[in-house]
Structure formats: C-alpha cells, structure tokens
Image (tube, rainbow, N blue to C red; front, side, top):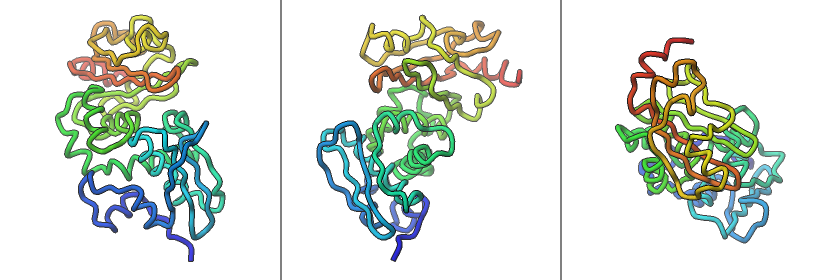
Length: 260
C-alpha cells in the first residue's frame, strides 16, 4: 500500500508534536515508510532510494547533527512529493542554494524547514529577538537546524525588518526580505568591498563578522547612503557567505519603503 503524501504540518499534528525537542526526524521518517541509515558519503549529504511503499534514506555519518537532521527532512520531502522518481542524491550546496523557485530541490528544502521549525513554534521563540546571526545560531541550536534554513525562518517569522542574502563566488544567489522590506529593497548582485561579507569571501577572515554599515553597502537605492543597516555575515561553505541584514534603526524602512 502506497504511503499517503502529506505536508509537514499535517505530519506534526497527526503525531501530536508540540515542542522542538520532540521533533524526532528519524522516527517521523520511519512513520512515513522511509528508513534512515548512516554511513560516510562523498560528494553528497544524503541520498534516497525507494518505491511506492518504502524508501531508504542514507545520511552522511561525518556531518554535523544539524546538517543530518535537515538532510533527513529534505529527503523526506522528496519521499512525500517526488515518489516514483526515487533515486536522488543531495549535496550541502543544494541545501544551501536551492531556496527560490518551484523545482523539486527547493520544495524539499521548504518541506524540511516546515518540519524542523514549524511556524507556530518558531514564532513564539523568535519574538522580539534581534535580527543577527547570533540569534540565528541560538535558534538553530534550539531546533537543531541549519544556519541557512534558520536565517530564512527568522526573516519570515521574526519581529523586525530583516533580509537574508546568500552570495557565492559568482555573485548573489538569492535573497529573502521580511514583509517590511520584501519587494521594496534589493541587495547588490556583487559584494561591496566595504562589507564584512566581502572580507569573508576573499579569505581575509574566516570568523563570523558583523556591525553597522552604510545601507548603500548592501542596498541598491539612490538614497540608501543616508541610512545604515546592521550586517551579520558568516562563511557557510567554500565560497558561500550567508548574510543577515537588520534594519535596527527602522527610519530607512519608514522613509523609503513606499518609493517603489
């Protein structure tokens, strides 16, 4: 008998899960007919092989637990929605870079985020928290999730105007803004030399860095230089820098938010 396809929220409700520490992704996967095994993988974080009734998810035993949990959620997303084409391998680059669009990898990432960081649970714990990577790191530890997924969640469900941006060696990969800035401000495609992210990308530093910078360092707007924004940046992989921008002083949002 084929396993029923379900959204992440439906699974959590069905299992009566109400706290982050109760989100046992291995157990949830088994409940859905997908059995998790751990072994060293090279060139991939996870892979899944299955048919209509059963699947086996192999997770890289060398990875951090937060990455492993997200990989399970990601592969379970494939199991829910891509059944019938089940011979897939996913890398950390896919998990970090595929967050926009409607392709199967993006949808699997979003399923994993919904499973590991359910909206109601996340909102309650993110309320009134600063828009910094320190907050992201603390929430990622609490939900045992990746920095990238947690940063996107904080932008979507946090209390303050923020934007998360991913850059690779070729430039900006994607960005997401909170409701206050989405569709109003756009980050530059290439990193500004005065940004903390630029220092990380060029290898001048490897430690997370942040501070207040002129807003035109990041935002493509003719009047951005009149304001500032708080930048937090971290290197998350080879030539991949994740940045969280926080309008700690919301005057720019108030003054320029309706220009477009």
